[in-house]
Image (cartoon, rainbow, N blue to C red; front, side, top):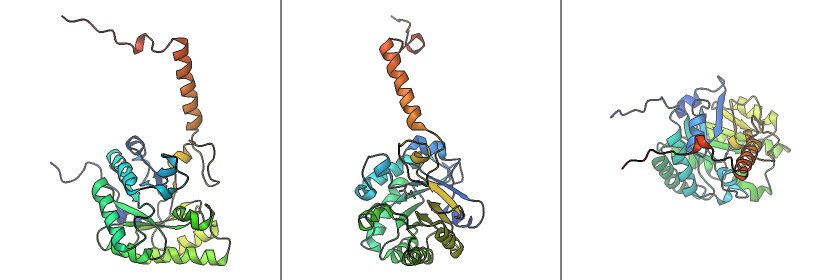
Length: 274
Ligand code: KIV
């Protein structure tokens, strides 16, 4: 048996080396078949805790558990062999201490086979990132709009209206870089601030609702596929799967009611044996 898989997996240092170079293409993935489709199109697949809302119908990411992340992380790791796979540490599983974060992250890494974890910026996060990286766990940062802080912020609001917010985003990004993150997501910030952060950091910035100046972009795959009636301003839709699924289901229902499904081509006609 070979020690290495067939495809060459994109690594954390390879992502870091893309700073200022070819833009990083990143998407979320939660299932094996979608991961398989996206594997040769994206550099990085994020098993985001957005799966709580996108797949499980939760109102926010706050209710997402470690078990949910591990289950979806395993599925994505089975589907993709080239793209780097990053799994989110969910709310409540890393903020208390570096040790708590290490317990959660090492479980996720060992059980899913992913290559890194992502953490949202919060009090004490630089120490935690340093602790994890020092123990073999690559970390992707997440600054700006932090979905796990929805209850403190009073909603999902873009950052950068005040000088204090600008300074906070910049300080968070610098701290995440200093602590050893291999890259950072910059979400929901004023475009000029996202550009400033990108210019200030040596690690790549991956924008979502940020700026085209970022070193790469990420979207929730289901948003860009048009699975929802509503999506945030920063989403560009590349398909309308909601309509396509509705039309397919209408056609299926029509054929069943008309008695035309299943047709001859969809039936077994087996030769009898004694
Ligand atoms: O959970 C998620 O999908 C994310 C991305 C939107 C960056 O954090």
